[in-house]
Length: 241
Image 1 (cartoon, rainbow, N blue to C red):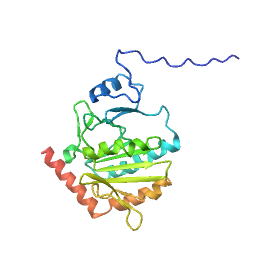
Image 2 (spheres, helix red, strand yellow):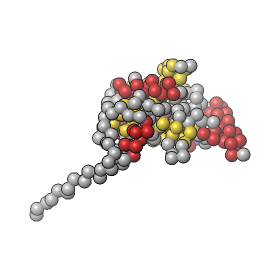
Image 3 (cartoon, one colour):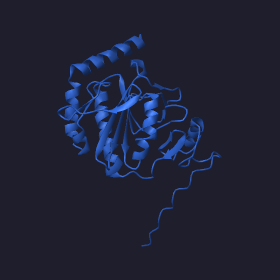
Image 4 (tube, rainbow, N blue to C red):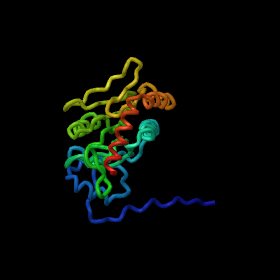
């Protein structure tokens, strides 16, 4: 029996708009115009005025599973904390030269006093309180240009999971600088901006999700988390009223 190979997909139809290219220097408006004309491209970022394109394929151990673990951890926090929202790969209009697409966002809802908003055309505008990046081939960008853009715009918490280095960096904004968040005596990272958001970095690095969630649950059971959740609820109620 003769077999035939399916024809490759047809290239996208030309819209007359120039394509995005790695290294292009663009305004944010032009970046969005070109990005929206290329629906087959799923991830692209404007960092300090320069286009950065995602690799065409993302590997299982280097991106897919770490990304899923971060989503599960932060999504579990959201489930226990009405007034915060988790997002995956949302484009963020950070400033006129920066529109990153963080792997994960945790933000306080605008109605609960969050510092970022959702635009009329459904983009995140401004600085989410927390962004997290799974960093393999992008370490040099994530820890340099992107870090500076996040810091300058007031992203209060920045997590970089350096997969190939088997390390997790958690930076917290102190004044005008990022400082590393250090673990307590039991090795747990405890966040002040999101009370109860506890991370066991050793467990996360070995992808022991059960232990990660046990540690988080301990944080969610603290009076500090209860007070934070109640404060968010009060702000939302006042906004609705």
